[in-house]
Image (cartoon, rainbow, N blue to C red):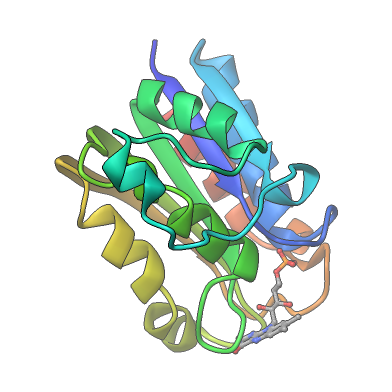
Length: 177
Ligand SMILES: Cc1cc2nc3c(=O)[nH]c(=O)nc-3n(C[C@H](O)[C@H](O)[C@H](O)COP(=O)(O)O)c2cc1C
């Protein structure tokens, strides 16, 4: 049994990213894994202030919000799923905010298996240009293996993925971790 943390970062509750995360979650839960699907929009998370307090004090953020509980889940996770829509050739603001708030533990990010789930209005070529922020974060892990990348291109409207094979692929990806 693995601890799985899914970071779902679209603002749209019924959007493509969240739908694929729920499929991944379903597959992983059916296999008996311990899964936490966190929808960042449902959490109270402020922007990193770059005050440096966390670096001086051994890793505690001055902001008292929901990020502390997410960092605990991250530290326990064997598997982390980064799920984002593409916004202007980048990740969502919610994903970037999550990443920046990991600064308190950036030198101790541990060893993780990593999956990407990405939805975009345009094509796969655009998705591939847009993931630098996640890659830059993952490359700071002490050890990592990117185990899967699930891309959902041509999904401008919420719910579009429901008509596509990516639904099944997300479920199978969760099932096969
Ligand atoms: C602010 C904003 C910027 C976007 N920028 C892009 C983009 O640069 N390239 C693209 O392919 N789609 C872009 N899109 C479309 C989204 O990627 C697409 O609607 C995606 O399905 C959203 O995921 P969601 O359904 O999980 O919210 C943008 C959408 C918004 C709201």
